[in-house]
Length: 72
Image (cartoon, rainbow, N blue to C red; front, side, top):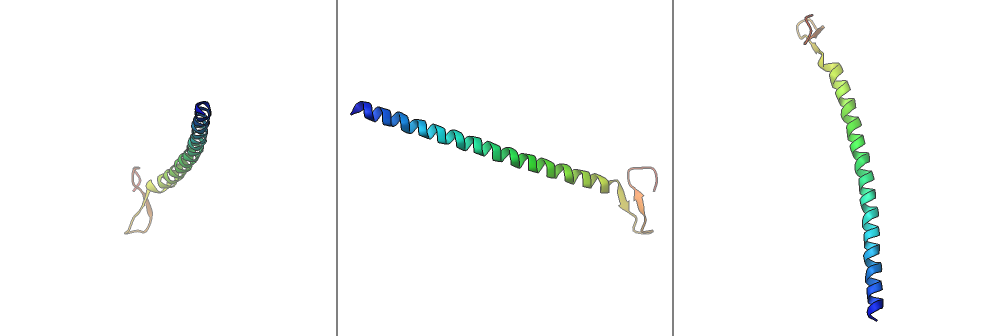
């Protein structure tokens, strides 16, 4: 009876380890996918922001002027 209890305990612990391992792998893949998605969104937003950051609207003339350049 003691041997059967030991085998059942080892089998149960093994099942828990296998389930935890698969959960960790699944969590890691989801986490990497989210990180990739966030990184791509930040890259897209920075590209769009860099396109609009160089120009500013002049309220008086209604023309676009360069903010960081020498042309005003």
